[in-house]
Length: 78
Figure 1 (cartoon, rainbow, N blue to C red):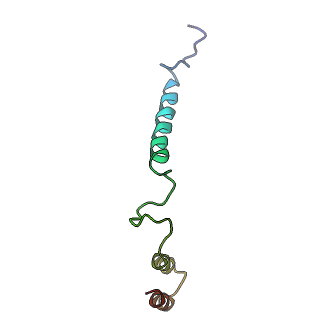
Figure 2: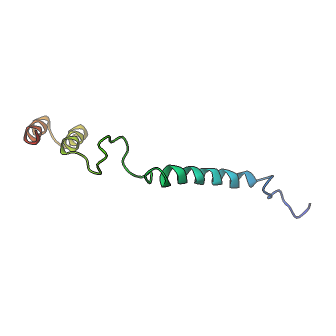
């Protein structure tokens, strides 16, 4: 009784253990069994590389290239 200090699995901070276990299992299933979870998502093509046109669109959206440059490069790609 006196030596327990509320640290058992059923009382006190024992719930932290179960919470961490549940989170670990969640990430194991999400990352381990579903394609490592760290890969790209939302890509319907299934390839590991982005298309040149999508990269060009991203660069234009970020403001790295002007509209004229975008249009010129787009014509070259298509």
